[in-house]
Length: 297
Image 1 (tube, rainbow, N blue to C red):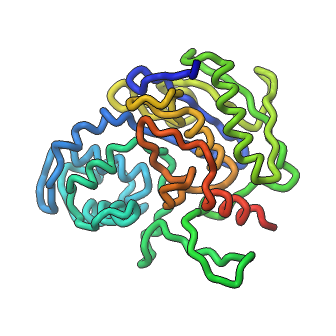
Image 2: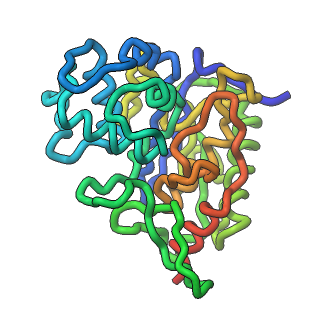
């Protein structure tokens, strides 16, 4: 029987990538953002309770410039900085760019997502999230949506065999089910790259540590608790409407581990959002093109 865990009672799955990437991934329960419904229709110049919390979320996922990263600068005022961040978010997710909290934007914001910030160039005039890549295998110039982390970090060729192990502070699912889901997720990437992955014995030193955690668990990214459950990955599911699929998210997080940032191709595994009840386990063409481009030489 498929392992499942409702987000309402979810413990947190944490994937710790020890070197060279720390791909911290968070998500909010959708019911955490129910307050957003009260913000629908807000416009610049208004002061509405809840805007500060939304600003904090947009800041965490990359939509505020560095000089506006301090929480002390955030308030419930619908100011120009927030309007600009909102427009960039709307453009990134192919919404109508209104600069207001219209119904479509509210619905998009309520979708569970990875907490790794979206790749936003605040100094660029071109559409955020669209990165042009020259195809080396074709004479045609193509536009892809994959992206890499700043500085294009990647594993050296001497480290294409990665080990992983499991360590949890809370027990949330059957360990065999967890092992099986993660093994399948790793294999998805192994099938299209030179990487191989092997589970190491419990307690041994490994490149990747996977486990269920909660609260302040020592990595500098504490989970905020019942009202704001932040996750480094998601809980298992059988595809029910109020749950998120573990294997789908594991495939996404492993993509971060290998060096891929978010893609704005909605069919891509590396797309930041995954609606509840969605099973999305297969790599898309954009994912494959991205990982092969990253390790092409």
